[in-house]
Amino acid sequence: MTVICGPPIMIRFTLPVFFDLGFSKENIITSLEMRMKCGIGKCGRCNVGSKYVCKDGPVFSLAELDKLTKSINLPLSLRR
Ligand code: FES
Image (cartoon, rainbow, N blue to C red; front, side, top):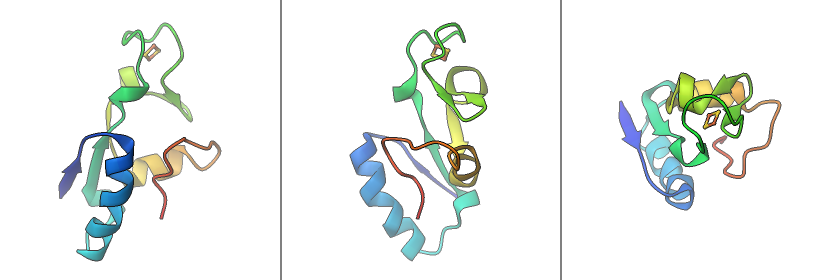
């Protein structure tokens, strides 16, 4: 298992390295705290699909994010 935390651009360029090393999406963990504003589930700014980052996260596996983002387009594409 590996954890990626940092600016979206860093995550974007780090993911291919982890895939090349053989990590599966279930074993790559990242945090989306940068999407949060109020942090208490009131503003609705942090939702990703049906989840609120502030209440359901902020840590998700890449496999979870893949399912959540199928219907939306995050600025940072975490799909491969
Ligand atoms: S940060 Fe406001 S609802 Fe999640």
